[in-house]
Length: 375
Image (cartoon, rainbow, N blue to C red; front, top):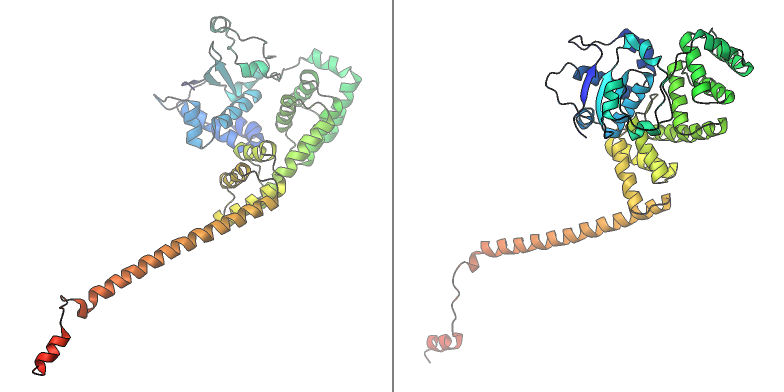
């Protein structure tokens, strides 16, 4: 991927973190997303710095896919804007001033069906969009006018939704809350039941922030989840696998980062391994490394996948075969080593024997005896 122009709507000459970012955005974001955002801020103040996705990924020990996922998240919440060239390559990242967020998020923008040419984008100020943006059906969150809000409230379904949400939050809804709630209903076309399920489960899990709920709602929209049943199925499968693997690796009460979730997705959805097989690999990882290493566990699981493992019995057979091969190899090596040692010992004994350190003579003992007897 080519170098990317990194710029911002403000430039202070030092790395400054807004309190608004800390109070309203950081607490709801994935920790790895926060690291990437902070690194972007730092890069803005490095002169003659050639920024690229691969460079950022290497610096933070991520994959380029992890980095792009973080960019997409921050773009969705409005903290940056991704810019694309005419050939749909990412060419720029504009970090938006957190204190000027209202002017950015108030734009009611939905991804167009075709990419704007670079000349048009330059003339109109609209960034050219990539295929990814074209396929992304989730729009930016609009800011509804007071007249629009009043019109929504006249809808009995929306009115009941607002009342139920205020009951969940145990407080009146703020302007941001109201805009987000109506965004889910009006732009994401989520049903009232699905919205209520989202709010209820988020609060039950300790996530009362509207920003957190908005992220979940957008992810559901990306995944095509439109009913409560689909949300329950998706959440249950993901939560059960993640919880089981975290417990097997001895991970405490923390959220898994994207790179770790990617491993889980590969093990479960690509390799189609059951949780008992994955758990076995995790336990072996702890035994060998004494730490929760997803990378090490992936090495084990990938080797099992390549060997055609389907069950724990298959793993036991592999272990048995490996043990037999190891013993045979060790025995063969020991035999060769012992033979070599015996040969060396014999050679040293022969070299050190004083009776063999002179030239041997041949005698005719019968002739010698006759001579001595005077015959």
